[in-house]
Length: 421
Image (tube, rainbow, N blue to C red; front, side):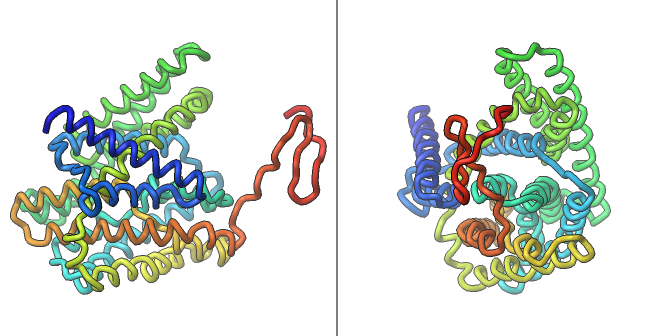
């Protein structure tokens, strides 16, 4: 691929993502839905302007680094105030790990027609909700606490677990692993090793940030952060493939806890970079979707995804929240909102290539079913999240607008603002 063509690919991708963001701001529609549609428009299923595979082996590296940035931002802002939220996240994560894996395996085989081995890989890939989708939705619809914290934390915990487990199941399918014992050891090694390396890198980074003068040097802090993060991800992937994802979350979490002042100063810049990464990644990966991979799935594929959305997710949430002080409205919303995101799309694309190279039947159907899951969950849940939250009374109250020394309250009119603010 020529450098000129490569530059055009990135130019079209970023322009499409920025256009989707602008349209979301003007219309109030969920940005993630429009980003997904923009990718379909410029990719194989639309105008054919962008072909992600033209990036070659660099696609995996680019996606990995950008995803690590998004997950680091999630860890940096991860908040679990109170024992109730911690218990809710832990129980939902553990119960979904069991229930969703088993149900996804059965649904993908019986309803979508995947072989048992490929169905197991699919079940692991779509295990987690995507923080890259959930976080923008939560912020856009102004979801009242603590639901936003629970949803974001659930995605950050399960997304690395699902990606690592999917890789190990893939290696088991291809014969690189032998037996469940090696799979369990590999899972613990990658998750434990990733978290340990991420925590150490986060400690080193936070110590370095403390020694940089506050003020104009925020740019230097950002450069230090990106340098440590990308080195961490590269070292983890070189030593333990897929351990870079849990390492990124752990590093962000440690920085956010150890150096609050530095984290606050960096937060806005990191968040904007993470949004830029999402704006680039969603159209790029959606451009890889082909109708020829979706159409053979037919109603079986649609039924499979709907089963996961309207039966498995609510059942898992209901089991996980038994005995917790959450009312029926909060349980209903938690049981509905579970969109899949960028990590799911990236893992599916890369695994499908490996399966095709190994001559495994069903690689195209696997990728098609994963992208159908993303399309349906992001589309249906993204469009219905705000109306549902509003109907259930789960939206946070709007902050009053200020004009000079007056606070404008939409209900009672102008009131004097607190001069100390």
